Image (cartoon, rainbow, N blue to C red; front, side, top):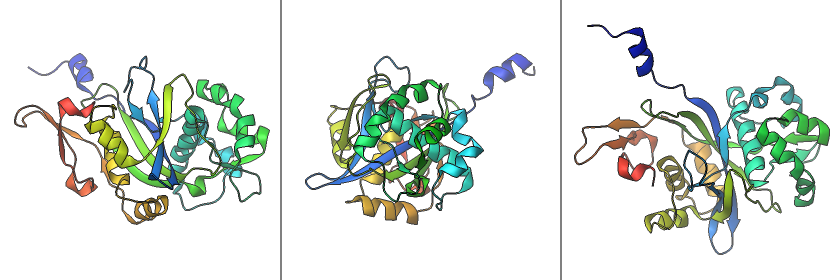
Length: 273
């Protein structure tokens, strides 16, 4: 008996929502390479309580062609510009770190100037304002030229909530501190990638699989300069994990060895830990 239209519709995978994530980097004299991370609010339905990088779904305004006059030219491919802008916006909304310059300046906005723009964070988050609104009102341009693609992951087709996510590296503006927004995120910290992984192993932090893999990749670099060089040299392979229900013991999530993470399989019981 053939499947009914209703059955076919039920079996169709959910669309993967375009999203982006920012790994903002700095160097610390004692800890070495550090990345800014936030702890998600426990009330949020996805990755609640987990340590993550600032990020989220793209907003309609992230692809506004009028933003072209508010960007510093760079090597980023045109199709990645909305994702890079989304990562810049999400980082500002969730952490107060704004990768931008005053029009015509060669320097990132300083902490004093960014603090004066803090009132924009909530309207941007709610979709009441856009990046174009902010740029036009405040005379700034977004430093997409400083953003480097790092990874591209797509949620497996079997998952009820799916994302098509680009991860980007960016240098943290020197005197901007960063702070969680108190809404989507309730804690924040600068942390060495390998320290974060050690704390996950010790079960003192919750870090989901995709985030852990980016920490593994990032943790191979000792400095932010090393991380940027590696990201620019390594080709990016789109990773869509596959659920292997026939794996011994329990189902496993598998990723291709060619993705370069040094890990190809993880038990489902450890995916969301």
